[in-house]
Length: 265
Image 1 (tube, one colour):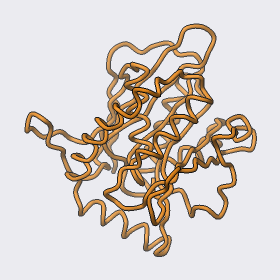
Image 2: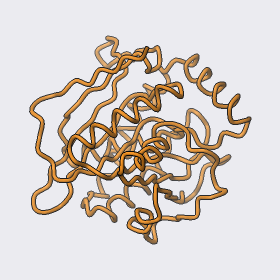
Image 3: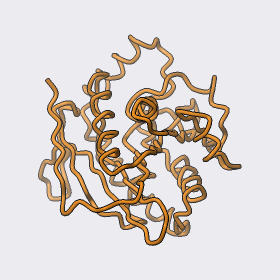
């Protein structure tokens, strides 16, 4: 039996029809890098900490040489005026098996519903055999309506045939959103598919898309400097992640999907 612990941090804010943006670790950690920069740039405030026995059986060693359990966090950003607020989902890990991924995604969608939110944006990477010079950002969604809403010259909506199944929370949040009478869209940036590669360029392109679509006024001049700092932190944690956990998850996926798994999480 899976145990999910959602701990609230501080007072629960009143949010205006918030949009959830998810960026958990996956191919190239593209979504993770993008969301962490966004949280920092917007000075978003932490709202929830989520822990679970369904996360990888490993701990991180922090800068104080002490261990930390993996955690997933939800932040919020409340804007002035009549515009939608944001919920931002980030974390060290994501669930490692199919049932847990579904359970986790359902929990997150219920959380959004508790704030009367009706829209989900997920971020991820498309693994290529070589490093892309200028990564293309693709999108897919739960309906043609939301794809049309976010379609721009920065995004390619012709994803069919480019990737196989979208595995993990990034895919499930969009897929399950429809059942909850919500809209969901995924932005996936090309990146190098090597497990130790960090998709900085892909994250940058996704941030440009979010900035354009949501009018976030991201300071692009700060982007490269901040991403380098995130890169250093992420590389340390990637090195520490249990190789057994990663290999077990990959074997499970390959056994179910065949040897060609070109997009994970």
